[in-house]
Image (tube, rainbow, N blue to C red):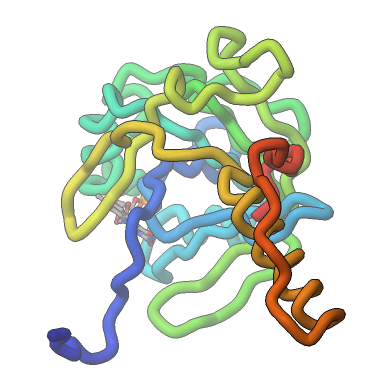
Length: 220
Ligand SMILES: Cc1cc2nc3c(=O)[nH]c(=O)nc-3n(C[C@H](O)[C@H](O)[C@H](O)COP(=O)(O)O)c2cc1C
């Protein structure tokens, strides 16, 4: 039995990140949970920012941002940066974080965050309480120790933070990988094709030779 709860935000888990905006001494960071990957080619990411945030005016002015992905061990900084405004405090200095130069944009990277995604704003959508800033990813930096032998990011080593219903969570166990159901899907597709050809259900083929398709680079 389900209970309707009305119109609300209810999509979990959310990644939670520190977004840097502004340049030089005015650079600020804001904790953002309403964010995500929104395009593959070119790669794009989006962040939703309320008009009242100090970071909102910086984003509108400099049209660039960096998504800094924190580790679970940095949840305290994530929380603090989401409670105080850069109008009142220098968050870099207060939290003892290092503003490192980005390679393609003006806002700095947070050196202590293991992954930094540099973005140039291509679209700004007024949604209501928040504007959605859609940025083209122009560079990604990742700590060497996170990279696997193929250059991909080993998420177990990254240990990112999820935000759900006002709580910070770290991720649990790995439960599969892209394409792990491919043998089942293939078998079903072949059975359907056989049934269409013969007018009867085709015998199920062995699926033990099926291998998962190559995982697309971050595409969903
Ligand atoms: C876990 C968490 C998630 C948040 N997500 C968002 C968000 O997605 N968008 C937003 O505008 N504010 C979000 N906030 C609130 C801002 O981070 C907060 O108002 C911050 O102090 C603004 O900083 P600024 O004024 O220096 O830009 C979040 C806060 C927390 C603690």
